[in-house]
Image 1 (cartoon, helix red, strand yellow):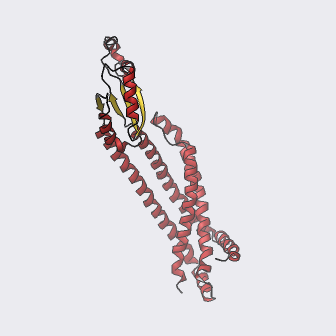
Image 2 (spheres, one colour):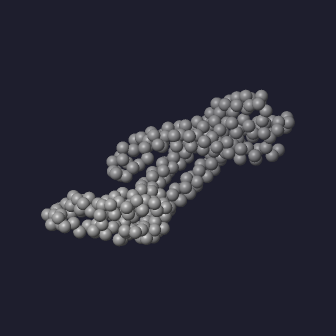
Length: 296
C-alpha cells in the first residue's frame, strides 16, 4: 500500500462508517455483545487460575525430626532441606508452636484436656517445605526422606496430584472456551459485515470495471472493519470493567482469605486485549467478507 493512498483509504473507511451508519451500528453492537460475553469468561478464567494457583501454593510437605532433637540439630536439618532442588522455602515449626496451635484452634473447645501435655509435649519439631511447583512434589519427598536427621516425611501426594489434575482441567477448559467464543465472535461479525457489503456490491463491481486493483478496493473496507472493531472493543471493555467493579466487593467478601484478581489487575489486561481482538476481528471479518465480491 502506497503511503499517499493511506489518507484516501482512511477517509473512505470513516466516510463509509458514517454513510452506512445503520449497518455500522449493527456491526458495533455485535462486537460489543460478543466481546462482552468473551470478557465475562476471560475474567472468570483469570480468577479461576488465580484461585487454582493459591490452592497449589498450599500443597506443602511436612518433615519431622526426632522428639529429642536439639534446636541446633533442628536448624541443621532445615538448612539441608532448603538445599533440595525445587524447595522454594522452609518454615520452621517448633513443637511449642504446634502445641499452641492445637490448643487455640483444633482443641480450643477442650483446652483443659490438652493442657495436661504442656509440661511433657509429645509433639515434634517440623519443617514445612513450600515448592516452586507442586508437580515436583514426588522428587522432593524422596530427597527429604534421605536427609540426615529426618525422622518422618508426611505428605499429601495423592491430594497434590488431585489438585494438579483439577487445576489443569480448569486452565485447559478456560483456554478452549475463550478460543471457541472468539471463533464464534469472528463468524458472527463477519456475517454482519457481509450484509453491509451486499448492499454495496454494485459499488465494488463498478470499481473493478474501471480498473481498480483488489487491494485498492479492499483497504477502505478493511480500515472500516478495524474502526468498527475498535469502537466496539472500547465500549465492551468499558462495560466489562464497570461490571467487574460492581461485583468485585461481593467476590472479595464471598471468597474471604482467598485472593481474587483486583480491578486494576483486570483493567490493562481487558482493555489492551479487547482493543487488539476487536481490531483483529474487524479486519478479518472485512477481509474474508469482501473476497466474494472481488470475483468479477
